Image (cartoon, rainbow, N blue to C red; front, top):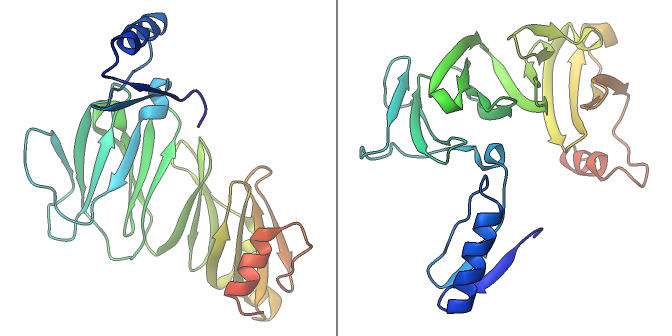
Length: 235
């Protein structure tokens, strides 16, 4: 782990080192553990996070914010802001099945709650916009300002202004399935009337935002992503 220092907190000389290092980097956070101290300096935005609960958290001193109606199937999320404070968000869900949390620039998160999209400003605990994402089957981060959204009809790019742009050579889709992704690519398969309803395979490049359509999944010896997809497709 980069820039990781492990020191025994019970050693007085190490306490002096910890205090000295903290003074040298006043804008960064230093966290102490009781027995062994792990120190890693992080930028504030790197400390922001979100995670979904699989239960309704108990009410305590943690601030709670509710978006939409409250109900037993709401999506509950814990957020940590850039100042390291914690808050909980409860999100009304739609009728789809997909739940995703997609981090974007300026400490914003796109929360996809079963067909309802919420653009959340994490640092102000506020809703910036609400997005209709009905029938969504997949959501993924392309970069810090765009997300890839898939429904049964095709693929779309969601930008920072909540505009949805359809990927033209993947329209008129009868069904689509996303199977694998990594930092650079997303792989899936689809049927379309444009191809006489014969199953085709596609690769979306997150860097170029281009789609390559193929007749079959193959492995060129270097692309492990396609190999994993090939295994999933049983080809």
